[in-house]
Image (cartoon, rainbow over all chains, first blue to last red; front, side, top):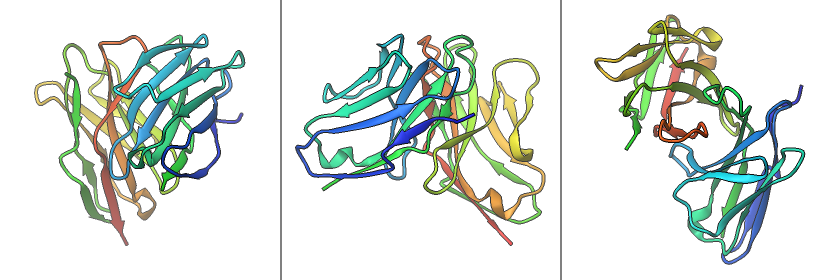
Length: 114
Length: 115
């Protein structure tokens, strides 16, 4: 049973560019959350998707947007990249039922903005 | 606002000795608490959680955590540390203000176990 997978592993972009990160949830999970982990910091919640809709959003600007597909996979898009967007982006999945259960995290995508 | 604090940036312990990684929380209402571990270039791995019930929670890889409501703490413990336990540990609390399961993380504590 595959866990949460993310692609790509690493990504280098320049300021002003746009980036798309991808996530496939663990089998049986229908809810996907995205977190940003800056160097030396704990993960910060970006947003969560369920039933192809954004259910909750953290304190991130509109440059950060997402999408969930019918197969529950998800994308995170960041426009007009800033140097401060350099971070590890983590995707986590969970079942909607029993929302107090643990979230399963993917290995992350390391984004570097030059 | 809800928050989690990990007061130690780094904890050093000798292999075979007991270890404790500290976590305190601030939430309104009953807390749902979690511990995750992160190895280099890896995502977060779930260790254990406290939802309700016994204050001593047992988790993966021999770790346990003690929930203390009066001290608003949820310290991670292991009776005998292994070199392979060296990693970054995160305490997290569920955002009780939402029904999405959003996690609020502490800053993390690096555990260094020396042979």
